[in-house]
Image (tube, rainbow over all chains, first blue to last red; front, side):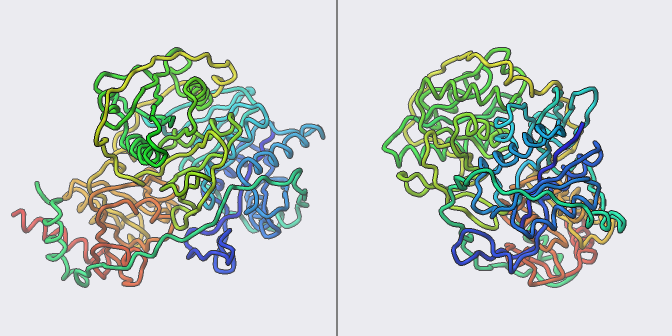
Length: 251
Length: 326
């Protein structure tokens, strides 16, 4: 039983967002980068399940995120080298499916593909589901816990009416939400080992159809009209006046 | 025709974000010269739900029934939505941007071989059909063309305010039991456990939320904040730093990867207001920020602010509330 976990290099959520001149992407010169938070948890689950390969579709810099996943226990990495801004969710799903199929043909094969529920930047909420249709596999979406036993995957997470459990045969696609597992920190030996892993580089199998993006824009900056109620403990009466005005103190 | 997937609560009402999606559909219908709006939902609707949807300007309510729809399966729901779409000939298929809404619309997009735009805030032109949606947790927007038919998208929570139609007519109910392939039932919910009390459900519906960030200092730094929460009958929400450090459980997290809240008042204490957190709290009607840094994004975006250490300010507020209550 081997797992493929798919990650994406995205802008760190603590960065200020500045757009490129062509308004097609966030300008990386002003941003820090990380992997999406949900994917950190998908990587943790993949490592716990054992024998995990990590993959990404991204530019040359995305190697950094692959190494991060290798440092916490993934044992192999595949890098589809491409400009992710020109790939829509259907394009990305097709490229992941190609990696899965090639792995099957070479005798390896993955029984389970894990992804994040949605990427922190493009927020498409659909790559895992489109991948499942590409492969003809079932897909469970937005779960926090995943376990595998006897060729079956059990996955669970919060639903609108309570904690929901799915149980289905492998192979399957599962998309993960943050909150069920604690992603481990890499150890120094883990980092050293990660540097030595040879990354399997690939080129995309087809020209991307694209994301349908016309342009990115920034929300209009709201002028700050904050009313400063005071400094330190002395502000307490003014705060409670506001609470009374807003009617949240009635009791 | 515009087809909207409507989600219902356990009590059988249309959830607020679904009513928002129908309101959005009405604006789209008006722009398109009065295209009829149908909704599709799972289970037989009560008479009061049908009346409510009629008041929102819905022409027809398609109810998906039968064993295939008794437990949730994204593929089965999408198959049902597309069965309705085929007979009714919809050019737009949409839902609220909830976990279910995004999931089912992603299945619809994949099955129909068309794009799906998640978390749309507004639409621009109709030809080509252009939508603006939230990306990077709402820190940026994307204009996206949906040139294929059906146009498939979800509406971001609170993009519009749910409002009944000015001149509604009656709505007709059509009960349908479309055939669902076995393959679409493989990944379905096999059990649902009652949620533990006081999980994120109360956070999402709370009228007042007290927020806590790195400024809490440690897992022991929440005493005064919890007291304020109790005094205001509020819920506690925390930033991602707080859950990552293990100070508080994940179900209390507000943000891009936690709960999205829309209380009447949000009181973030010691939270700087990075994108990750702002994505979860930007729908609050008023914000009262307590922070040592007057330049923190949370302070400049707030309605009211106190500049100071939460460990000094919050106990003083608690004492003042108790004093006024006698």
